[in-house]
Length: 281
Image (cartoon, rainbow, N blue to C red):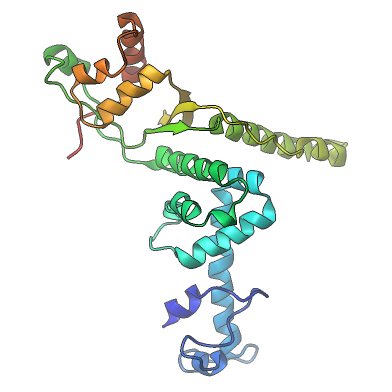
């Protein structure tokens, strides 16, 4: 009952709802399981927990969504996050999973992000890929000797779970990097003698990206987050590997025009990054 009360959405005035789910007055219901004290009523004490939960979870989704805030604006993002959290409440013990269903929610409710729904979908997907890359599972890296010993028509590899391959309509990677640079400039500018003017320059709106197909892998290396642009042929190879194809079929997916030297270079880079593991179940 306590959990149900705490997780109920706040009112428009950011307070505890006045009525319980069965229509009874909330102050009467609160008094059934919370004692008042010399300063607060039962209703007011419960309201504190209700507010703390929602303010914390709204802060968390903001922290994970700088790209969406910049693209949609504060008001539109507030409407989106409120609707999302009301209809897709947290079901995990960790705030890390909070935005895992945001991309699907935006697709299902395009009016909340119009006229930038297509962009919002891709930003949400990219942001979740960053979360996965930051602390996703890392499996034992495949030994290079296995590749040498096993015929390519029989060899199957897996892609590390923390690597996400994205085929995007917008260059979201460069957009996110520009936002990060702007935030760093704003932080630095706030400490200068001419702070007000410097912050004004640093917080100018980052231009919305124009459509441009972008193939990118979001991953980590040495505990740092990276975005790696991929050639279309390289992207097809990695997709095929992740899809369970043999090494020979995966390389064939690159297309006839792809030179062997380029493929060797790609594999050398991917092996150095530790992207390959044993295939999943």
